[in-house]
Amino acid sequence: MTSGYAATRIEPIARAAGVSTATLYGYFPSKDDLFAAAIDDAAEEFSRKMARVRTASGPARERLLYFALAYAEFLGDGFVRSMFRLVMAERPRFRDVAMQFFERGRRDFGGPLMEALRDLSAANELCVDKPSWAAGQLMGMIEHPVFFMPMVTGDEVKAQRSAQQIAEDAVETFLARYGVDQG
Image 1: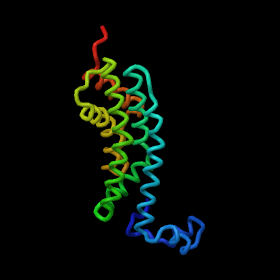
Image 2 (image 1 turned 60 degrees about the vertical axis):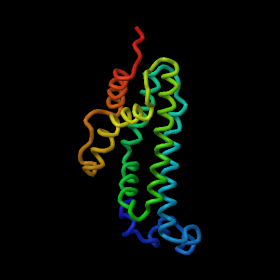
Image 3 (image 1 turned 120 degrees about the horizontal axis):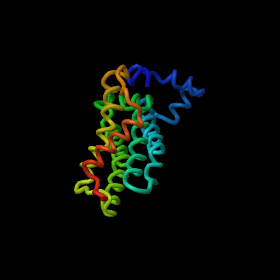
Image 4 (image 1 turned 90 degrees about the vertical axis):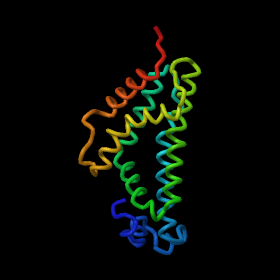
C-alpha cells in the first residue's frame, strides 16, 4: 500500500508478518500471487462492510438513505481509497485482478441497490424504468465528493459536507427524480 508493487520486496513483508521468507513463499509462490491475494482479501473486507446494506427494509427514503450513508462512509475510508489507487496503478500488470476487483464491487454495491430499486418500484414507491441507470446516478452523487475528489488530489481536497449530508442530499435529489408522488 505504501510503496506500490514494484518497490515492494518480499523480505520486509515476511518480517512484518513474523514469518520466514521461505514460509511466505510456501503460501504465495510469487510476489504476483501475494499481490492478488492482498487485493482479494481487501475486496472480501469491502464486501463484509457493505453486507449490512442488503438487509435494509422500510420506505424508500429510509432504505436509500441507509444505502447512501453506508456507501459514503465506505468510499470516505482512507484505506479504501488507498486500495483503489493501488489496483488502478497496477492494472496494466494485473488486468485480471483489477477486473475481478471491479466485478466484485459491481456485484456487492450496484447489485443490492438495483434490487432495492426494483423492489421499491414494484411497491410503487419509486418509478424507475432502468434500475442500472438510476443506481449509477445515486452512486455517482456520492462518489464524486466523497471518493473522486480525494482520489484525484491525493486526499488534499475533500468534501466540505459530512458523509451524512452528502447522503441526504443525494437521496433527496434522487427522490425528486424517481419518487412517486404520495399526495
